[in-house]
Amino acid sequence: TESYTDWNDRNNAEIWRKSWAESCNQYLAPDNKIDHRSYERQGVEQIPTIHEGHVAREMGDRSERVQTNIDIKASNRDLSSLSATIAKIQEEARKLFRQIAELTELIRK
Image 1 (tube, helix red, strand yellow):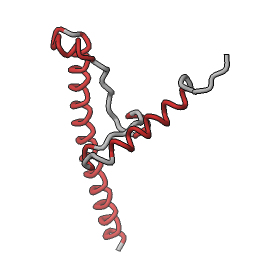
Image 2 (cartoon, rainbow, N blue to C red):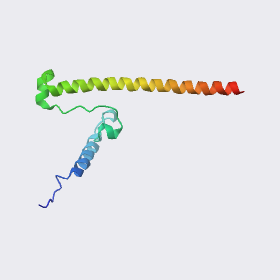
Image 3 (cartoon, rainbow, N blue to C red):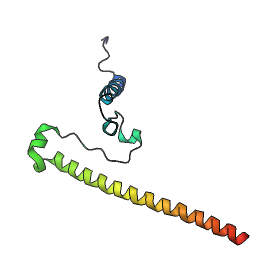
Image 4 (cartoon, rainbow, N blue to C red):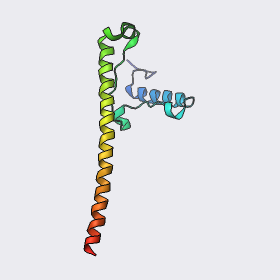
């Protein structure tokens, strides 16, 4: 079978998704821009939610998919909080290292 449309070529999906994101982003505010890449490829430490669909949303909390996404969102909040705490600790460590370096220099003099 010869394919003339390349509809089933997985490489086209990346091209189409990128094009869709670029088209949408022309009309979106900077803080609402979309990115066609996965969180991993974007360098974002976040767990992706799963697609729920309208049936699951209508079911609400009774839906396993909705419950899964609720759990994922809670985990992402925890992850974000931990990341912020780690960033603060790292900044404090940098300050302490600078102070130690300054004190070491004073002692040498």
